[in-house]
Image (cartoon, rainbow, N blue to C red):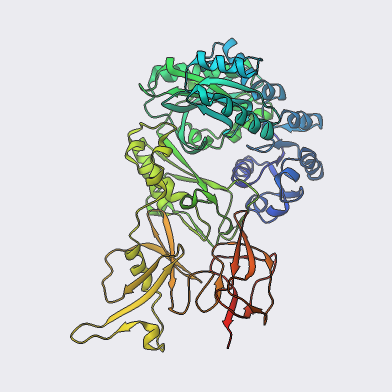
Length: 629
């Protein structure tokens, strides 16, 4: 068995690999960029090596830096995780050339399946069904347009070197073909350095079905059944599950046997995934499922396969890389129950899924004591960690296993609703609504599900007045404030009103009568800036609103607060300086966009708490302007 392992990755997959390696008694070495010096995977590993600046292209994507870290740490092997260098054949060769063990497939296998056109031809030769299309060398517009017409619209243009949803265009009409082809080619050249494309028949009711395969150096190849990854947004997976809903025995045998043939055709060693596209318009049928591509690495969604088979796929990777045969034969593998995974992203569905960054002041995951004993969390962060804008926004994954699909879906939806994260925004409320939707629960989903229901999934109906009333109990004016601050009303022949004015973090304002009974209880917690109330996976922060103040930059009393977490990039004034209404005082950069904060009226800068380069939290006082005279 390998004695020491360097993980050439970060985040939740690095933490996941460290967990298995530690159980097997393997010493682990983390690598980290400047942005990740205090990251969870660094804290978990036995040793850690710095590999450069925050930008991935200057650290995690530089193979020589990874190899130097391996030499410095005395690591025996390198596990690439997924993403970054995991499917880079040149790096795999460099690792073995350096005398290290590469925990992954041989470079030849990576190359064989790396280009979509060559991979499809190899699958045709191996008897694996492929989507009808064109794979030819003639890339001229006239030939491609003729082939598209022969295939029949709609067609899909795909970059041969593509991935991650890039370099793909759906064409519904011949008149669109030339423009969309050029757009796809430009994106392919920019993203992959290769503008070649292939054409495929576009499936109108597509389901994304993939099969986990595994091979060793003793000639053994097995499959570990299928996963359904049809819930996607812009070709990125959101919810994954195993087994695929609606899969019958005959179709499963056919698709899994085809996946095993595909792996055998490239002498595959290690963990891999054969991805298929299925026409789900008439249910899952063996004659309507076609090969799309192979991922020559571990997949993000591998935990659902682990949960239904009882297999630790990372352990299998390490054993196979150490020269051992596969731990189980095909006839020893079976499906037990159902598992579903939700990807946990630091992004805000309400703003078009913009990334959300900053410190995780609160990160609380439901415990088994909450009645969710079949939950698993693969996390790359902990409470107090900082979410960087340099990397993928995925914080981790929530996985639920149940005896039935309904039980797994219910447990996972509940976990998404109960998870508390603040002030970073997440997609968990969105995920909970996906999991609870009647169409998802029926199993009749395809890759268009999210787009069809996007408004309902991203714009939840929240009982905001009731949430504000519940929050107000802890936000009432303290004793000693005057009647105007308390907001109490005096009326003849009527019970007195005790009102408190609140504002939420989205700019909503509420006049809450404290004399009214609380009709609904919510989850929540207190912060320095107010009370955060939780409902159905959505969180809103409420705080006192005073008539002379305001919720964010541009307050009537001249107090400008940070409208969101970000970094101050420029400060244009100094304390005591006179300013005019509308004059820019400072600039805040958030989510890679700049926001200028301006003077709300003519006056003097009475207080300046911002400095260039400082990271600030939402609601932080940055500058206060006093009126002249």
